[in-house]
Length: 303
Image 1 (cartoon, one colour):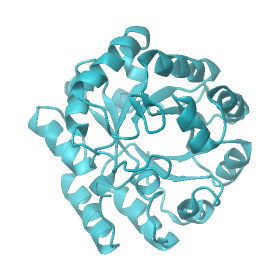
Image 2: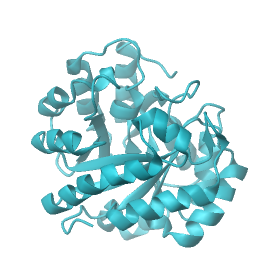
Image 3: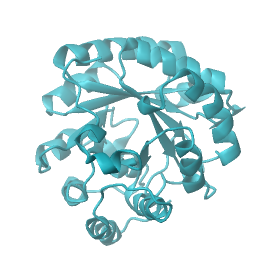
Image 4: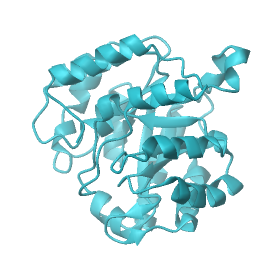
């Protein structure tokens, strides 16, 4: 793990907020936009990130340094990172599938990178064109290089409940991938319900295995809202001690390699549900509404 890894946001919160504080990470600029069919101008992506800067997030996932051949919408990653206004205390994260992506990200002065594996062989082949084991071998030099540079690395695991090519995914396969990513140096694991098939019951079955082996403090829930279960799945995850969740402004998102999957859980929807249930997020809801209005002005909508 990098020695100068950014401290968990909870360390900087007032004591009376620690027990009921939930961290929401904004992934809209990357995971939300990657599947948009019409080209979005870099200036509009920059404006969206600058707007989200005002909401109070500790981390914004800004873009992905992947080949434009595979994700053309994010081919302007360097331009976007050069154009945003960097808010004090904000961490800007990007996806880096290989060393080429990492070197480009490092040149863009990013704060954090993410590698993204899968719990199923079928999705691994479709998403990053290699087996699960091969993906780990690709990630190893990225994580090692990031560690040398003092850059934190998050590990993503896709299709933790359901794979569009293989069906139901066994929790043990997720645990195996999580342990491998942690062993190589990732500081936290984002558990991705990529297709949005998860239910409270399947999330419980997953976390019965995962949370029994891994500290919930290093786990992040990442739920797509294809069947309107995302908020319920977050609430179930909270009962297992997970306090960090990815969300996307206005529910933007989808995945080019998961046909039919809708966007990530809406940041505003999840925030409101958490507040109603007695949790706190530390976010400025009015500032978030301004970002949602900007999404509408850009002509975007949940998919």
